[in-house]
Image (cartoon, rainbow, N blue to C red; front, side, top):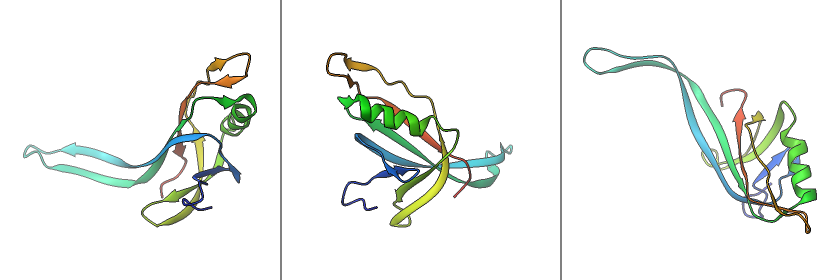
Length: 124
């Protein structure tokens, strides 16, 4: 998988079609976060949890949306994505947030753009 050849994301080794936008948020999860009377933060970093935000393009076909839904509807799945920090691909277990495919053209069986967040199960 290479960012140069357009393989931005794979779920369970299937390249995801129709990606319009793709970003990896390096989300930090903190434990026991608090501020003292001087305003200083006291917290323990649990880890970085890279959330992947995807926006799909307009006019996805019925078959493409069916493939995407089948992959995202699994409770957990392996995601292979490009990690900018490591400058290489990484595979980890994720689950999908809510998403809402909406019909664009019923006769041509095309769908409107929609988005979904992929949330990691474990810290990286």
